[in-house]
Length: 335
Image (cartoon, rainbow, N blue to C red):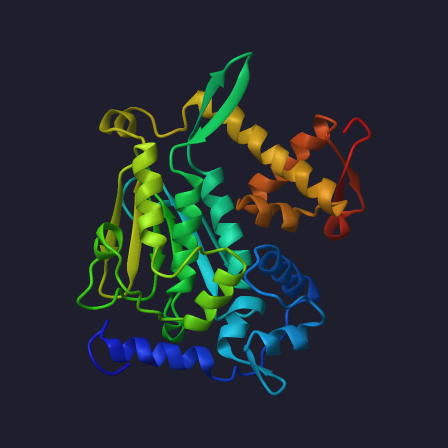
């Protein structure tokens, strides 16, 4: 890349990358396109309806002839170009990790996986409101988490070949995007006043806007800030030489870090219940769930996912069908 990192010419190179033809790249299954088009149509942001993937991609200006543009590959193809690496570190330093996972695929699939990974590995508190109604509240607003993840993939420099990252520490959660912040601008410019956005990936941003995954151009940082301030959560936007970080500080004080490195007991039951409810809802919608599907749904390691599924079988929530790699889980008769 020519010039200093973050200069406008660097953005221009990435914009050109969006519109270039992709090399050999498999189309995703029809369901990915259909789901996206239904969301966009229901949101009232496009008038075209789903017919077939070739027609849809052409109407969305993501193909040239019978080949995908790079932006189309990022959005709809299972390709190594777009990936996310996620880790849980044992302390507040980037040294020993307790878990590390890596996934590749279409952008929105990666956003879902990363969101579930964070939600499954942060603390939730329980509040009871009238007649024993329970509300579970995360230590970091879910809306802010998803907005940060969408921004991370929307503004990534895909020509860098680097991975998006999610790092969960004892005292914070960091979402890293390998795409530098525009030079001469600061994150506060987009929070304290209306600043014109610098679009690194305009085709990707446009499609995510159509499906209402992002609300409008240039408002993501303010939405994150507003959600955190409403919830009383401290946050920070960090400009790096190689990219950009959204940092959410967790509700752990110094005494908590020194005294106990395990989640507090009050959090265990809500997290378990939340995970089981997600699996049950998935099976209701899809009929069955495999270990791989549950792992991606929850954003957990293989061993943890197997333990959760085993517990749900023992509790007569699920039943097993098939053996080994062909094994599927169905809802039991009581469900």
